[in-house]
Image (tube, rainbow, N blue to C red; front, top):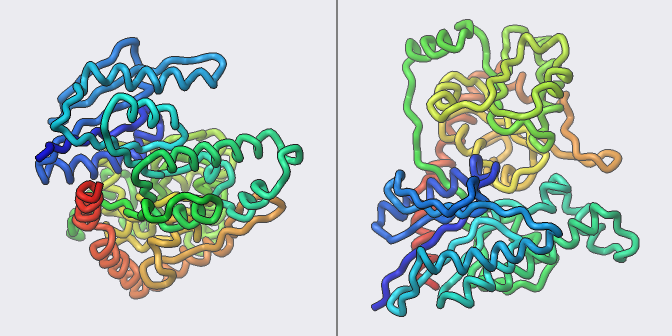
Length: 412
């Protein structure tokens, strides 16, 4: 009987610090628990040499980045990655190799790995470049695909190219995993990929919720220099345009007209100057924390009265899941994975995303109305919070993810 060895690929990039990084942590936790052999391989790392580390209890191989000009020569990088790995992953006919990729658009890597190893290759679509570029606007996507080449703008041509590359890569792999149903639905609409090798395995999280006593909550508020009676609206994530920060700040300004003892906490890094300008004279009521460590984020979850994910697009929405886990009544943009996680008025509240003059928008007034509703109706807010946590435990706690993942590996 062959041994199975799993090699998880990620990019040592900004995205690896956020959602994909969380996914890798949850994945390795599951594999550790079941005593499966695995290693993590980071591409596009810093430095000039390949480095190997075992600091997390498993081997991590980091391969440095190389800048190629012209850009198309980047194919050489992925081809050479496969050559390099032979030094660290010796070929063994008694081993079943599974390469678990967590990025799209690198078809050369798939081809090169297959040349060097007898293996199975899984690809997970955590995000796509074109969905980010269009903020998840599927109508605009179809419009671009239906245009003739000469009528596409340069940006649209790049989107078209990215889509075709993604589809090509999916076809080269043995299994295609989507973290949300809407992603798979779109790919099935725009391509002829084999549906039988596609499946949805939603992201999941280890349950970190701990009930906090009223006295301890006051102590955490005091630590953050917050008044006992001040209501906290919490956003966690990158302060990017795609997160709808503009509309959240506008909505918070509206909320202050009726709920002056309220504070908006924006926990994440980004272009602060832009958002300070947007906040204007209301900036004294908004806290920009910068990027926080995990312990600090958990403290903010303990004192938040409302969680808001005002995103114009989210492939999945791990932060919303964390808020539900921590029994925070949560408001989200009705888009992408957030739409699947939240049941409107049951496990959270949704705000519509509209396209106005080609731009994706959220109504600040609708958003502020929903925040006000939760602040004024404590029993409703508590019900939403309780239902949200129950939904997390039923569908998104780590055990469900683990079972699906092990079934996937065994099916290869």
